[in-house]
Length: 147
Image 1 (cartoon, helix red, strand yellow):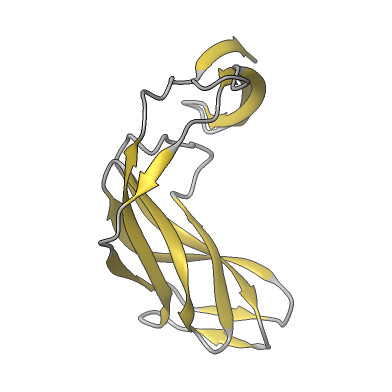
Image 2 (cartoon, one colour):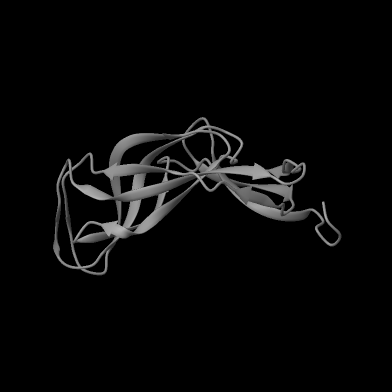
């Protein structure tokens, strides 16, 4: 770690085996990485029908996408659905995973720009998938306490 980058205690929410979302306290530190110049586009395709109202923030199930380890995903600003805009993606449960782990995206959190409908098979947007390389050894967060 660089000078001044000490471990800090933060609450991380995880899903227990019985499905509850609970906080654990971990010690984590920032670290630097380099983003690759070669990327991949992945389509976020709706896997359900959904009616939306303007201004709603909605969770839309999509066809699963696998993100390989050591990659980050950023929604493309120029390719979006006319009714909703993708804000972020997630696995569908309270289970954050580090960039070093393979992840499966199953949901898009989207903002409805107008009243309308999302239909199964609709292209919701595109994810830019970038490889990342750590510029030095990152320290894995350490669990300090669990609920």
